[in-house]
Image 1 (cartoon, helix red, strand yellow):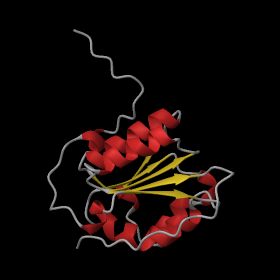
Image 2 (cartoon, rainbow, N blue to C red):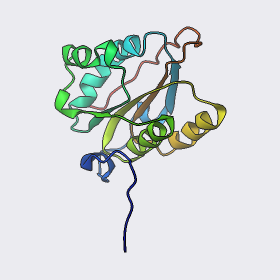
Image 3 (cartoon, rainbow, N blue to C red):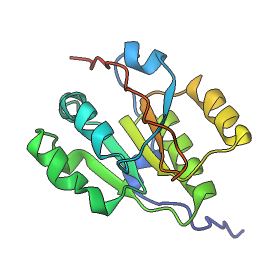
Image 4 (cartoon, helix red, strand yellow):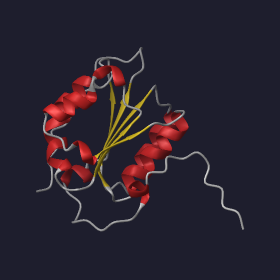
Length: 161
């Protein structure tokens, strides 16, 4: 019998089931869908303190298709994020990026998942709403559409200690 895995991201720690303490308040808030004109730089700066706390828990901070131009590695390192807990996923297209986002949010091995996408249509937004019901990590989807309005302010997120 032959098993075809396709071209899905294959980091062994990302998809394995793990048991972690109970869900926290930020996991109950759903997935934040934000528009950005800074390619996510301002949003990462706002989240950096929470990401630093979350990186200390031993679970992954997953970045899906991050914009290299924003210097996210330096930004996160300066904020105190454990870079050995940051996992970067490069997806070929929007469909694969949303699939990776869904898997990372529901796997139980991630504490935060941040995805960069162009513009989501109604179907994709509905899909994220359904994923939010079973998400076990903080989820942020950054729409980098050039026609986006001003970026939505991020809610204050609380990390588990």
